[in-house]
Length: 613
Ligand code: G6P
Image 1 (tube, rainbow, N blue to C red):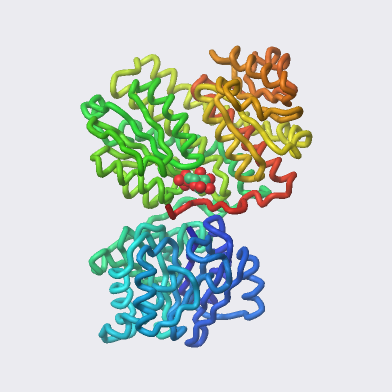
Image 2: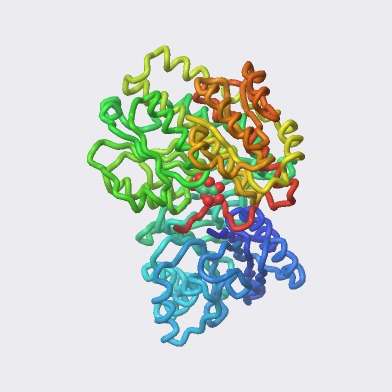
């Protein structure tokens, strides 16, 4: 976790860095810091808490300089404190480092460095990088200080192990920043007379949209408007910046009070954008020929959190359309269970960020078995997309709110597109069934546009129930994962107890927790299981629950007879219905959190992408 930003250019770097840190806060926000090279000396300011605290502290000291680094932290080694905040320095105070990831052998290195006389000031793994560079600088020979720094960093990279991305600045090499990427995200922005180093593109997008994506093991040397990339072997490599089409506004709130709300409203467009890939690249998504597709015997889906719920929905799609058995695993579990791997398998990793360490670990295991691997991912150039054979980009734009909304519905949409294309290719789906499934998919964005109009209804409802201490969500079949997601969303942003169950299971235990007034949300569109959901409503109501039925046109009357409130959701086909059904639950989580005064975009204890295991 953590966010890194660096600036080198012709202007004062401080506002660029502070602003970049604010854009990176979703990656961690327990402390932050900056170091600026001011007239040959490094000035460092650090503060516990959010970037706003750092900004206040920086204003007092008002450092100025054209080269600087910044960091926003999500603690892994050492508690959130000023001493543990980045940037970290060596003994001389001339080298500063900001880092994202984990240095696995840091304890051993720390002991070695201490025995050589280095003094450590923090409990972090990061600090060993600064001291190692200092130590290595003593031993490398080169014509210039810049070359010495480069060699010392290269030597350091050979000595540290783990997943890391870091930025280095040395007081003796003004106008130079060094970036290193090894299995943690790091991108470079190339502007006119200025260059940026960051964990993610939105950190500098308002200044340049020309981006260099570093490969694993690569380094970047940043100077004002000029960047040199060195490959794994240290050889300079020719790379052209990619032009990112996300504009500044896309990456910002667009007038909404919170990113979460904006991103819920982004969903019609997000679905449209996700399907653009499906329209143009349908046959090519998987990169397998027909014979290979027909030979597939099983699919393994791997993901974490919200993406896992998208995977659970995807299982129904693949089994229905492509007729292939599917398992869905939490990535953190997949990695440590015995996985039978003798048959032809497609492994699909779903991840918004493409940087979730558990997911990357699990897909690497799948690769070791020789499985064909596909990422369903939103972030261009992310680690997961490099690890997998192919990627289906959801293209739903940057998702900043920690609680995932538009990425989730885009992931389900992608799974549906994939499943029908697979079904067509392997002969499981007739032409007419494919056409019908495809037609519904192409109407989905429009239906989503209608669904987001439910905000007012849900907002009104939350007034009655927001003080409840627990919430229950029930659904069956494709709507069971939506019950899980509804509960997760509410937990994430409002810190309330919430649980999702398969509605058929309620009588086997969970019903005991229902008390008078417990809000129970029933996902009950008019499908083949509607009657069974009606019974579940009655069972809950008989125990005093406050039942909210989420249903589709035509079923309202029946739903009203068993529920305290009915929310009518636009209708699509039964299998796509979850994409719409989750929307009122997203609004529900948002409005309960808002009424409770929670920090919606950055809930306590969470981070947007968890890049540690
Ligand atoms: C974190 C976030 C969750 C997210 C999960 C997976 O835990 O807090 O909201 O669902 O990571 O993230 P990914 O980027 O892999 O989809």
